[in-house]
Length: 170
Image (tube, rainbow, N blue to C red; front, side, top):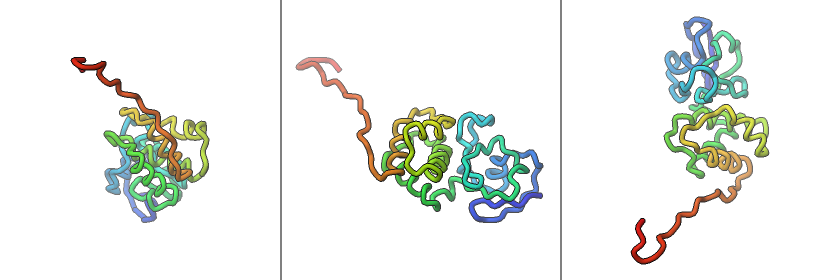
C-alpha cells in the first residue's frame, strides 16, 4: 500500500511496488490526461512533475516516489508557469492531433519554472525528449517564448504561389 500526493490530494493505492506511476495515475487514481506513448521514456507523452521536476511516468515505479508530490496535466494550470504555458498553447494554436500535448505542456511548464527566460538552447534541451508526430515544434517553441515573455515573434510562413496567369492550371 502506498500513499501518493497527486495534484494536492492524498491517494491510498494498493499496487505492486514496481507498477509504473503512469498506470497508477490512469488506472487506479483515474487521471487519464497523462498519456501512454512508447513505454520506454523516449517520447515524453507520459511526462508528469515529481517534486517540480519533469519525469517520465511510464518507467517510474510507484515505490520510487516516496513522499514526493506528483503534479499531472490536470492540475498544472494551477501553477503560474503551467497557467502561462496553457494560455500560450491556446494563443499560438499549438495542438493538432493533441496526443503528445499533455507531455509537451508538462515539460514546458517545468522548464519555465526553473528557467523563466529560456534561450533557444534551453528550450531545445528541455523539450528534446518530447516527440510530436504532427511536427508542431515551431509552434511549441513559439508558445514557450510567449509564455516566458508575453510576446510573440514572427512565425516563418511558406508563401503560396499564385497561378501564373489566365488559364493557368492549379
